[in-house]
Every structure is written in structure tokens, then in C-alpha cells.
Figure 1: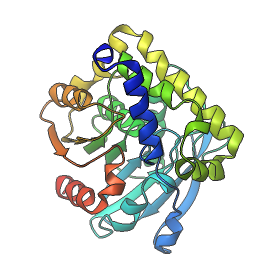
Figure 2 (figure 1 turned 90 degrees about the horizontal axis):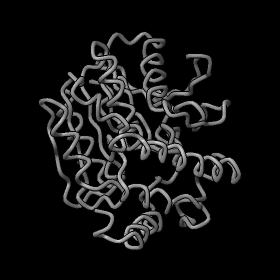
Figure 3 (figure 1 turned 30 degrees about the vertical axis):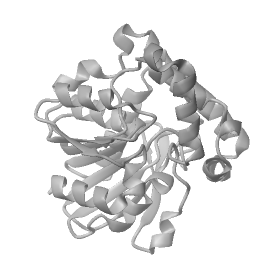
Figure 4 (figure 1 turned 45 degrees about the vertical axis):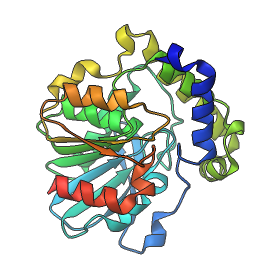
Length: 289
């Protein structure tokens, strides 16, 4: 695939995605949506994890952000508009991201498994007996692992922009976002404001190295071996115009997660839940009910 497309072409696509502001959404404080969103930290697995919470429904839903993301930057429209009557929505910041610092973010080979355990243990600490997962990008990978490893605890799952393995084409895309100085100012500035220029740049480089570890695994494996273990109803959403995660990744997950559904959004890009928030929220609500 990478040879057919040419590495330069793939690199141009990844940089164009950043110029369009679709890899990492602009920061927007959830507090702007009113006092119905609360914020707190809680001790989990030796770190203090930050989360936001809204709604009073019996159905608990955890929002899992992408690379360098946080609940605040990645899920504003979901915190604002998902039904507060049907759901209790929690958006978390994984360790080293957002306001879950210290510690600094690091990327050992098991960082996705660590995030999955942190996410599940966070929700158990908050006394939720069972949860559904909405996972975007890296958060989608974390959700897949959580659903496979903790099947009795996961009710339903919606993922988008996720991949279960890394290809040569993916590696070129990742290298294309290593240098944050090449990102558009519109995309870069909010993250610099959240993290500071140095931490943001260092962590992005560390992420590229961290995700690159999987290319050295057999078949580029991240969690492909776990997909058959997923038992919960699963909806895979894919934006047909996503320049960062090719369609074959969604197809592979759909093929290997038994009983899963694949929903294609013809105009969707990587951050389809932000650009098409109303459509996405309705899709998620209908599936979760």
C-alpha cells in the first residue's frame, strides 16, 4: 500500500490534515457549556487522574481521547449534548495528558494496556458497576483492549479512527507529524497553551517513537490478537475522508470483532465527532440505548 501511494504522497496527506486542523481539535473548555459539567481528580493506580462528568442517567459512558488529547479538548460537543437524562458521561485525561499530570507521559510497549487498566479502574473507583466506551483514535485502541480484557465490565462500545496494527503507510504518516513546528498554528497553539511548547513538542516526538514500536512486532501488532475476545456490542464508525487512518483498519476491526457494525460517514474526516457532532451524537445515542 505504501509503495503504491509513495511515501511523499502519504506525507503530504498527513501534513495537509494538520493544516486543515483535523488531527487534534482546537481546545475548548467544557466549562463554557455551563455548571452541569463537573471536574475532579482521583487517585488510581499510583497517579491522580483528571476527569469531567455530566448527566444523571443510569447508563455510564466513558469518553476516551486521542493522542495528546484530553476530555476538555477532544469531547466538548459530547459533554454538552449527549443526553444527560439517559447517560452519566465521564471524559478522562489519561496519565501524562491534559490535567492528569504529573507524571509526564511516557510510552512503554504496554502503554495502551496501561491506559485500558487505568480507564477501567477509574470508573470502578467512581463506583460505576458497568460502563460503555466511546473511544477516538488512540482512545479507540484503548477501548478495544479494555473491552477484550475486561468483558464483564464493558456494556457497549463505539470506536472511530482506531487501528489494531501499524503498517509501513501508517509509519510514514506518523513521521509526518513528529515535528510540531510544521503543524498549522490553528492546531498547534491550543495544545501549546495546554501543555507548554516544550512538553507538547517532546511528548509528540515520544508518541511517534512509542507508536513506532509496534511496527517491529509481528504483523505490526497492537491489539489484533485481542479483537476476537471482544464480547460487547460494538459500533465502528469510519470517516471516508480520514487521511490519517485508512479504511482498511476499520474493515479489519469489523471483520475480527464478532457481531460488530460498521458505519461509514462519506464526508467524515479524522475528527468526525467534532465536525459532524450532531450526526455522531445521534448515532452514538441510538446505538447505546
